[in-house]
Length: 114
Length: 112
Image: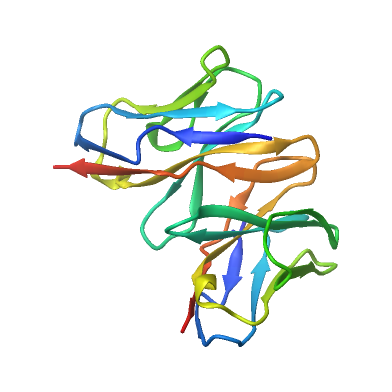
């Protein structure tokens, strides 16, 4: 079985400063990992995905994540936060094989201060 | 290309009633999954359909059921509604053989 732990429930940054959202995963096989973002009263938008190609994955809106197998981590970063980045972020692992069930972390709420 | 659409967007029901939610996937997507999102439990997997067959199921009671039609549209039904069923229900679709799923805006269900 797979699981995801998002290490921070809330992260607060100032506009223009770097963003780091931390995620550790547990899986018995080589997983596919995703980051999704949810703005208030909206559905989930795919930011980026890792599917065993390059370990550094670039996504939309300047976000990127690095897959580190030795640390079982998949942290999300952005060099410079914008006010529009304020949202909840979910780290997600896929079931693998023909099992497309997604297992979500509890989410990290990102606040961006002016 | 149009995204995943869900109807209705908002719904208010009373305990004991039943409800049907609808999801239209992205054109060409044959996999449809449903998730429940609540403040307490977060996002939980309900079930996944592919080519009109339920392929995976989460740990929800039998009151939660679904189906998929030949055009890949899917419906989810909840019978004998309980207060705890109040949630945002999200539908996601994906291409055959690919794990990436794309989500709709959700249906917010309030049970009174």
